Length: 383
Picture (cartoon, rainbow, N blue to C red):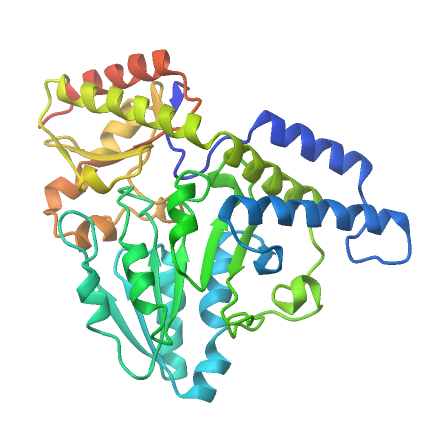
């Protein structure tokens, strides 16, 4: 099977997280909203402890953390949950970028049937969005700007701090998809002025199927987001449904571990990236790095091995490396990457692009060995 290098799709769950979840599954099987017995109280305490752990990681209040099934649901709630408010205030203009995850792009597009106007901002070839391209589109009826913190395909970090600073007093809501950065760019996230933030546990070595939507209070009031599904008052009505206590516990534990190990992990990401870049330079192949590495995640690199089709390479080298050529959510679709297309890259470069992403604990020795083998396979595929 080789080595797993697709952490941007999903990171392996931490053993410490898994052990904690297993204990919760065995001993805390009450419903966190059952208020008539100790089993419910115990479950609720686990949930609230996890809420505190998430809040501590992000530097927010516990009353600003709402559990969801993951970033897909969080993104949908953050965007669709504003429809009533937008209609009431006659603010139906939304700005986002052409490189957002499909959960944002498709959700924003769905607003058009409700009479919304959508503006999409494209990046430069660097993969970065121009701040002024966003701010110049702001109008009196602009409701929302939604920009991801870092792109899942390229790892390129967007200027969300600067955008947030600009929007803070403009009366325009700001949503960040922090799926790829939560638990990694901790200090940076704490400094950003945003109204809503989405995250998923499985990107930071937690379990799949759980995440959170952060709703920041401004002048003691939450953003005007309403539930998009119905059936209960869980999570203060923002996300109804029985709270999955063990999954929530896993998210909380993953956030606690990330908070404790941030500096060590960041150094480990950087060490591995330097090794990968050196292997690329020494490969003897014609390789282009996609995106400006001065603004890139320390655990990600997107490269094009010129003259080598990415699909052929991944199939021919899967015994060495588990890598991808785009978002896992669209891996069944072999159309060219819409992210790299939006960056203005040519068709050949896009068709030869692969993404390599790793964890802080990825073993460097087999990583070096297997990536070297991958590049050797690539040499035999050059056309």
